[in-house]
Image 1 (cartoon, rainbow, N blue to C red):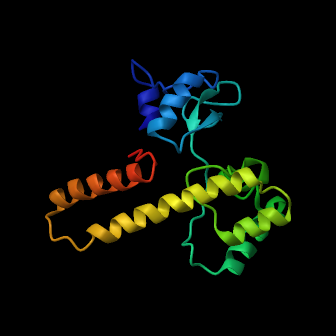
Image 2: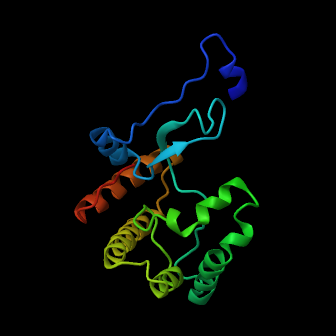
Image 3: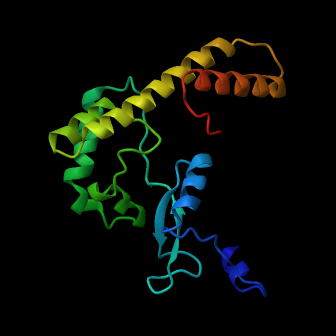
Length: 180
C-alpha cells in the first residue's frame, strides 16, 4: 500500500524529525519516550542517497520477566554479543544487536543477568544503573497500583477509566510522570 501511495498524485510523505530540533525532540519524548533519533535509509522512497532524518525505537527488543533465571539472561546476552559477526547479516534487523547500538538508558529496565554481562565487558555505567533502578522503581509503583484495582468488578470502560486514574495518581505520588 505504501508503494501505491508513493505513486499516487500526492505521493507519500514521512514526518521528518530533524535531529538538531532539540526543543521538538524534548516535546516528542514527553509523550513518546520510546522514540530515538534515527536516520532511515530503507523503505518506500528511501535509500542511502535519499534518507529520512526522523525517529524510531530500538529494534529488535528482547524482553523477559525479572524473575527469569539470571544465568539464562546472562548467557543469552553474552551469546548475542560474542556471536554477532556470525549472524549480523542473516536479517536486516540483526544490526540492532550490535553493542554500539544498545540504548542502556531507554524505557525498559534491563535484567540483572544482562547487567552482569554488560558490567563484565565494561559497558555498564553507574549512570545506567541509576536509570535502570528508576525504571524498576516505576514498575514497583505500577505493580502496587495494579494490585489495588485488579479485583474490581467494574465494566470494561469503567475499569479502564478507574485504572488510568489510579495509575496516574500512584505515579504522581511517587514523583513520576504517567506519560500515557
